[in-house]
Length: 188
Image (tube, rainbow, N blue to C red; front, side):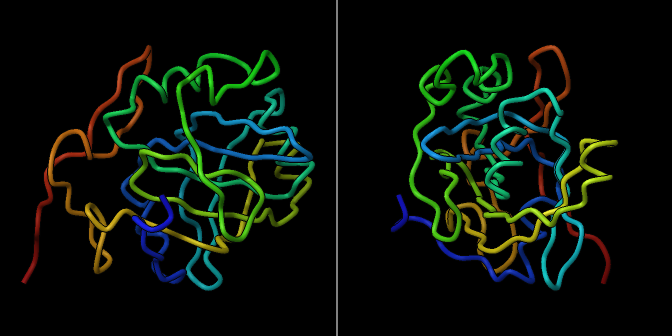
């Protein structure tokens, strides 16, 4: 898998999230790993690049993030929307959510959390400890330490979706998603 993806300049990694896609948050610690679907992840800063992610305090993913201090944001393709829904519908405490959802992984380069196959982009993140925000708002701030994209859909700092299966998705509610729409160019 690693040979089919390309690095994204860290200063431009915000472009992988600024269109508001659903993410799969993956994490691992001491041989335990988990994945969850999350719609509340967004870019925060450019230099160093930072992201925000809301991770509920009762989740297994949260437990592993707090233990490891890192996580990955994976931006899934539309073609795995059913797997994204499955990853967001059960607890990792009840078994291997990757297997349950039918998700395969490959190793990250800079963190211990796995990266999820069948995604358009990946951001490897290290938590910047902010105990008050984490405890009160379930809000994690993290520095992006590596960013990757599938060049078939993201190159030269632009998204270009060649077909419906390789669009990103946005969660609505009740098991329904929207797919990313058409590119619109404005201005002079």
